[in-house]
Image 1 (cartoon, rainbow, N blue to C red):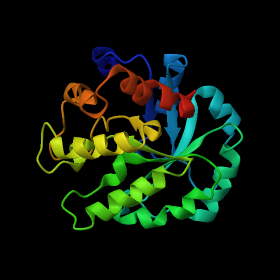
Image 2 (cartoon, rainbow, N blue to C red):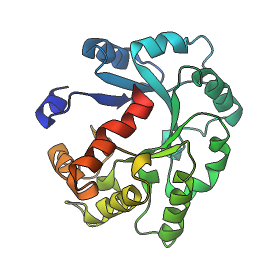
Image 3 (tube, rainbow, N blue to C red):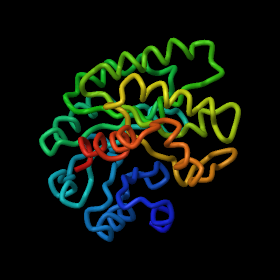
Length: 230
């Protein structure tokens, strides 16, 4: 909260970290303290039996995240994911999918869930991969689906060149130019498992390199997020 104040942000969305698992006590406490200015994205075990999504909605939760990266646990069971999707559709929640570019082939199964899908961290594209252009094309195709969005975060993780992350920002700029109404901005603070954690003020300064004018910045930072987090 102190960081957001220093950077000039009044509203934010916090994603439950894998290290906290399905214990959302800290996140729910933060949402209560911020009295509607912050929203949350949660992790759910299994089919979420025993959870009241209506109650969680009133507390500020707006979505469920699934990690498809091997180091963050086993792949989710799509039957259970479908059961969760059925329960979060009525309050208007979405699913956030954290995966790598090489796994974008798995995404069609998620498009049939009937809820919006947010692809996290620009699909963790590997800028050294010989398949990079194909993966960008896949991501572009997915963004043409009315229910798919992408988070223009972790340009610093994607970057091969390092700060000021020109190569990672170039990917974000390309995605925003192609589908400006399907893009969200964010950071990966507190940057876990990062070999060289970035200065968050630098990441904020780079917003203008993705969305160069006031209208596009408002779209990226306010109008599109409102579709998912109000």
